[in-house]
Length: 78
Image (tube, rainbow, N blue to C red; front, side, top):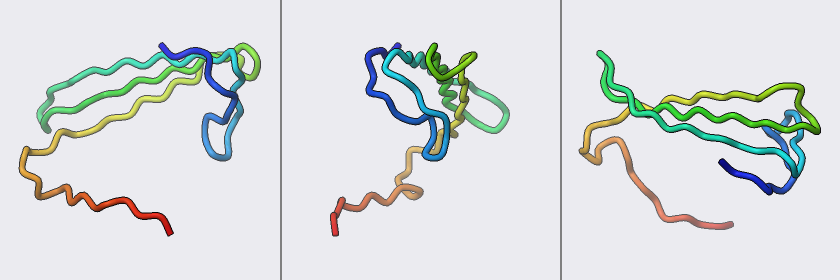
């Protein structure tokens, strides 16, 4: 659970959240017929701007441990 955040926006063009907002996140590892997944459930509650909880679920598929799908590059600023 995260509290005492600076005010901001739930999305770039979305609803704002205030300093009293809280974020609760749950991380679940799930196995299925298509492989293994990481499910991240985020719940934002804000008494100032939201009438109910803002819930978002994101799924990530686990890839094989070969580095073929990931090619890191150094950060640069222009």
